[in-house]
Amino acid sequence: MSFLSSLFGTKSSSDQIKKLSPADFKQAIKSINKTKQLVDVRTPSEFKSGHIKGAVNIDFFNTSKFMDALQKYDKEKAIYLYCRSGNRSGNAARKLESLGFKEIYDLQGGYMNWR
Image (cartoon, rainbow, N blue to C red; front, side):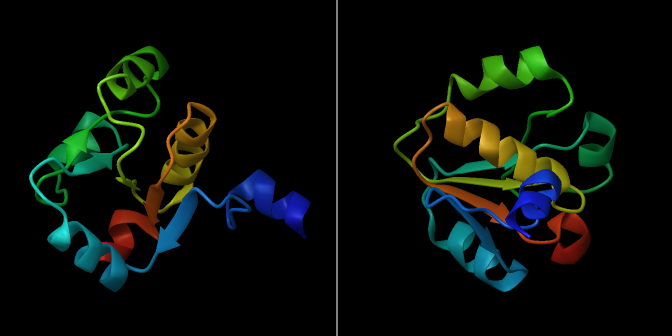
């Protein structure tokens, strides 16, 4: 089962990556300060159609810009990610983990689950 989970990103075996329910995600981003690291990894058109207040759009599919943008974030601070359904943000979370980010939170079910 862990093989399938790793392929489809349904479960993380990492201590750095935590999936949060929409309620827990809302509470977490509500309590973080102005330097919060809240990232929407969807495309710009998806972002324009609606997003979580305070989120920065970094398109996961634009690999070079995604990697460049991540260099501006603090690896020691918590970072909160979401996408449309949870798949891209799961992949992005694993990428951030490989880059040395210490505390990564992923919105379970993505923006579709947010509303």
